[in-house]
Length: 300
Image 1: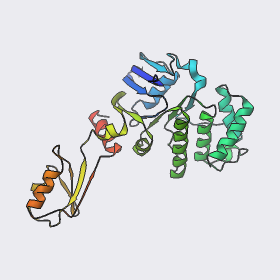
Image 2: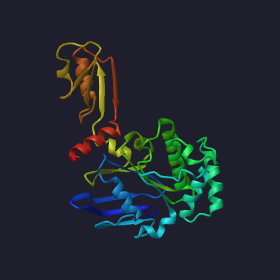
Image 3: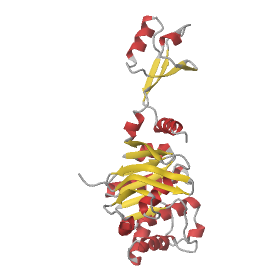
Image 4: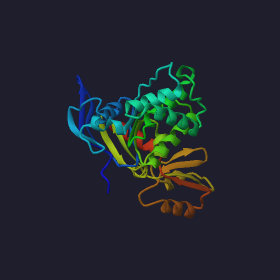
């Protein structure tokens, strides 16, 4: 088994009296998409900056691409910071080449790759168009391409979907999947659960600077019971007494958590009472529901 691309053990960081990161542990396998999820102010950006070597932790250890000092492997890392910024007078392909050159990529090769990647991703951005003439979303995607033009082994994206419309969000998701399929490890932060649920091979949920969960999306969703929506064939007084405690009526249907013994005893009671079942759906809770529960439990 390959060593993880990124590990963090007991990371801590305070700014004055505020503790931004409080003993964070995480592990991102190589060749995976790993999400760092948390509400605003949870310590996501600080954690990523520690992993990048931009700031040093007060305590704990991180290992990035096998190095204890992330800056030793900086040319193998691509980084999209939360604060976006490109030189407005630069042409799109030159901005991409410039970012690649900062990571050791030859300037001419960067311009060639930049033009090629702009065309391949379908962004409809002429390579010679200046940044000042692009929409905010287009400029953000140009900066993203610049962070990956040198074909990094690790791509770190801080809130990459922020400010993008749904169409450009889809394009960004495709770029992220393409990098993973190329063999890179993608580490990104977000507080939007829909992207994480679609993209992540593994994820960590943090709140209050601490990790509250680490695992796969399915493992996270399994933390909560299955959700049932049931409509009786013949609704009659006392229906709620046949359903699990906490059942809530919504129109003609009842919503409730599936009890540990399963849905079958509920159906048997309804059938025996003569009320029957007109419709039934049972679904695993969304990642959003798990996220909200863990964050609330953390008091964040």
